[in-house]
Image 1 (cartoon, rainbow, N blue to C red):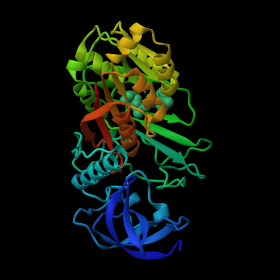
Image 2 (image 1 turned 120 degrees about the vertical axis):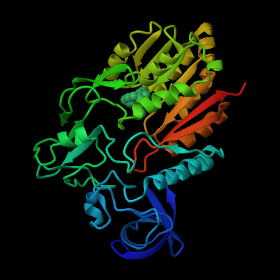
Image 3 (image 1 turned 45 degrees about the vertical axis):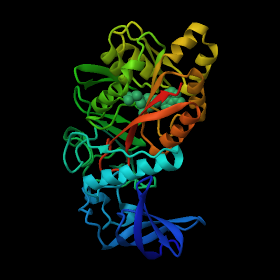
Length: 406
Ligand SMILES: C[S@@+](CC[C@H](N)C(=O)[O-])C[C@H]1O[C@@H](n2cnc3c(N)ncnc32)[C@H](O)[C@@H]1O
C-alpha cells in the first residue's frame, strides 16, 4: 500500500500534530490535514496492523479554518518528502490551532490522567499569524553543506530560504545562503540581550544573557532556554501566580526540579522575598553553575547538579526528621523534558509529600500520565492553564497546580 493514494474523511486531531481518518475500518494518521476535511493522502507507512500513516497531497473539501501555509517551503503543494518540518499547523488559522491543541490536552487528561477538565490554550503576545517568535533554531547540514530543518518524521535536510517562525533578528542572522561543510548542525540564536550568534557544530559554550522583566539571567549559548521570545516571562508569571500563598512556607525545603539556569526559582523568590529557601536541581552541570550565579541574591537559594530521579529519591531517603518536616511544608516546581517526570520521580515526590506542586509540561500525554500517578500518590489537580508557546506547530504547554489531600 505504501505510495498509494487514498481518499479520506478526516475526523479528529491526535497528539503529535496529525489528524485521524479511517480507511476500511483501519485508523490512518494523516499529516497536513484538518478535521472536517476530505483529502487525498499518500500512504507512507502501512507496516503496522493497527494504523497506517499518510501525507495529504490534495485537499478535496477544505476546512473553513484552512489558510495558505505561512511557510511555502512546508506547504502541501510540495512533495511530502520535500516539506520543511517544524510548522505542521502552519496551514490552520491560529485560533483553530489553539482549539485543536485544547482538544489534545483535554483528551489526554481524560484518557491518561483520569480527570475531566477543560482548559483555554492562551495565546502569547506577538504577530496574529503566529510567526516571528523563535529566538532559537537548529538547522541541519545536508551533504552539500546547505542549511535547513529536517522534513517531518525524517532526518532528510530540507534547505530553505526563509524561517518565518523566527524573530526578525534571528531571520537576518541566519546564514541560509552559506555552506557549512564538516559539521552536523548550526544553531542560530537571537537572545534578548546582545547580538544574534551562531553555534556551529560542537563549538565550545560561551556565556549569553537573557532578560525577563527587570531581571537578567546568564546561561550558556549551548544550553536550554525557553524558545518563544515571550515564553520565559509568560511561564515565570504563571508559575509564581500558581503558587498558593496559604500553602507556601519560605523556610520549607522548596524545590525547582529540572531547574535549568534558575528561571522558576527566581520567579518564586521574586514573589516571596529575600528569605525564600529553594534548591534548583538540574542535570547539566554548566546550567547549574549559571543558576548559582542567577540565584545569588537569595541567601537561601542554591543550585545542585543531579538527575532528578536519583537526587530526589536520595534526598528524601536521607532526610532527617527536621528535613522531612521541611519537605512536607514545601512547594515543588517541576519542568521536566518531553518524557515527563515519570514513575520514579512521582514516587519520590509522594514520599516527600510536599504541600503543593506546580508542574510545567511540554507534552500533554506525558503530563496526563503523571497526573494519574500524582493522584495515586495523594495529589489533586486543582488548577490548570495552557499556553500556545509554539504557534504554527502542534506543541502545547500545560501548567498544573496540585495540592496534597490531607
Ligand atoms: C524544559 S527544561 C526547563 C528548564 C527551566 N525550568 C527553564 O524553564 O528554563 C528541562 C531541563 O531539565 C534538564 N533535565 C533533563 N532531564 C533531566 C534529569 N533527568 N534530571 C535533571 N535535569 C534534567 C535539562 O537539562 C533542562 O535544563
